Structures are given as structure tokens and as C-alpha cells.
Length: 129
Image (cartoon, rainbow, N blue to C red; front, side, top):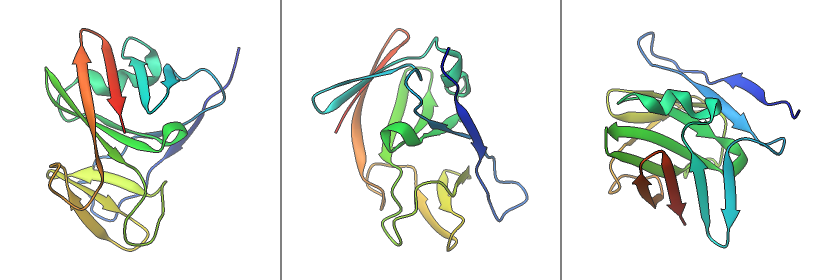
């Protein structure tokens, strides 16, 4: 069985929610195909996406995943456009914050983070870059 490293993200605000970074050791529930990643949301590594507002830093695939509604998950690049950090994220009040320099980014696809096309069908999420 393959191990998965879990690292808690840091945040400055006391009320900011944090979650785990998924570093790929081989079996993290995502499958690459060309420019897309297919994720089985029934995989326990993605359990935080079961609830609205849940999110993960899927660092193995360089993306932040956020459950917006019961039928929508958004996917963003996890590379901070300001300084390039990938593992210092927190999420609160509809914003991702990079703890490296306290820069915040809206969770809309019109914000500063690169947004990817995410399609949710049942328990399968497909993200296309």
C-alpha cells in the first residue's frame, strides 16, 4: 500500500479553515489523461469535498479543489501568482489566502488564481487544464 503525506496548511486568521495537502505517492484517487485529471470523490483522500465549503490542496496535481454547491466543485491552480508558493494555503470567507505573504484570492473564476474547467458527474470529478 502506498502512503500519503498529510501536511496541514497554515493561515494567519484564527477563523480560517485549513485542510490537508495531498502529495502524490502514487495512489491518491486521481488519474491523469492528457490535460485532464479524473478524481474519484469516493476515495477517502477527497472526503473533505463531500460538504459544501470543503476544500483540499491537491498538491500532487498542483490544484486547489473547492466544493461550491452539492453539484459544483471549482478547481484552481495552487501556484500563488504573487510568489509561486504551492503549500501555504488556507480558505475562509470565500477567499484562498497564501500564508507566505498574506495575499488573498477570490474563489470565483474571475479572481487572481488560474481557474480550470471542472465537471462533476456523480462521484467523478474531471478537471481540464
